[in-house]
Length: 468
Image 1 (tube, helix red, strand yellow):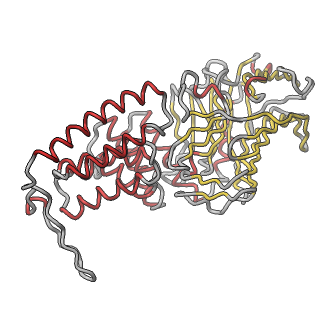
Image 2 (cartoon, rainbow, N blue to C red; image 1 turned 90 degrees about the vertical axis):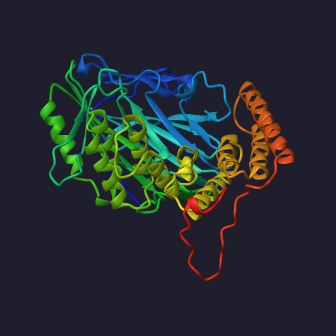
Image 3 (cartoon, rainbow, N blue to C red; image 1 turned 180 degrees about the vertical axis):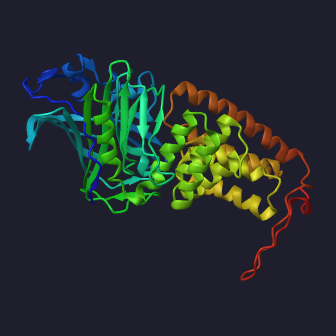
């Protein structure tokens, strides 16, 4: 499969420095590489733009993968700056440099860096066009084990630009022929290519009158179209994520034309992912109803796509704006489509307390939370969210069992010891409280059973009809 949206960053460089050198001087450009961070570029300066810095110094380039594998959640980041100050096992930068060498591809010349992490061997190519002002960043992956990417958007390569790039334009796919959406005051200005390619972007530094057109491509052994729920990668599978950029100084019209050309290359199947980006930019512009409409349209176009509902839930939480779905309902819709993301389930689990639910719906919601625990076995909060509705039904034995399991999970959660200590104390106190109720209180108010008769539909029993 080859999804192509050439991201052309016009940066003309010619590699003239030694491979392990911290600095590459090429034509009008100077790139500084960080030896301590897998030779990632920490600076790219362009003389054609008045010696302008194009890259953020700390998070200029990063490959990230948020994993829900092994019944846990870990954040893998190539760039160690992503988790400065985070002394927790769940934040991982485990890349091991293997080699680096000069490389050349057609009109492009630069450096290849080979490194290995806990799930793949990765070849990163930093390439500069010999003529013109173009930069290409290519990541070639070869998995070293079976990998489950539960949300394809969470396997990505991101380029963060210098602070001057505060204007960002993206395609507006809400209507055919619509002009681009533009947001001002964007910080940090980032172009991200995930396994769900979300189209090109145009960035502008108004003060220096520099424009960057960015786009990306997926290549190699990937299914087409890519599933939005889970992407299963076999051991030895090879694929690539490529960023291309084009840079303009004082040529806004040419930059706009280059961006428009990239927009024409978009595929219909990309529309839902781009609609989510449109919604986020509309939210930045304080256009809440328009953002909501874009999210609902994205959800309608791909009914398996969780992100529109998760973004809508965040919109409800942050703006308190009313709408067809409330926050809990939106989180729950997201969870149905991607039950591995603990954030969706955890935020939506209060849905089981909705007074509009029948008894059957309430109990099914509780069971869904229990199912979600299966993929987050080492996160104690999950058990607590399951325990609370049991306690509300006066099912103290089950609630206590959940708290005991939460206490077990504390020892295995990827968090610091100080955090674990506070959790142990809180859970032990709650277990003692529930045990006291179990042995001392009468059981006159235990929950009634829900009749089940094979081959017959369930009744719609309202909560009020069941004494608790």
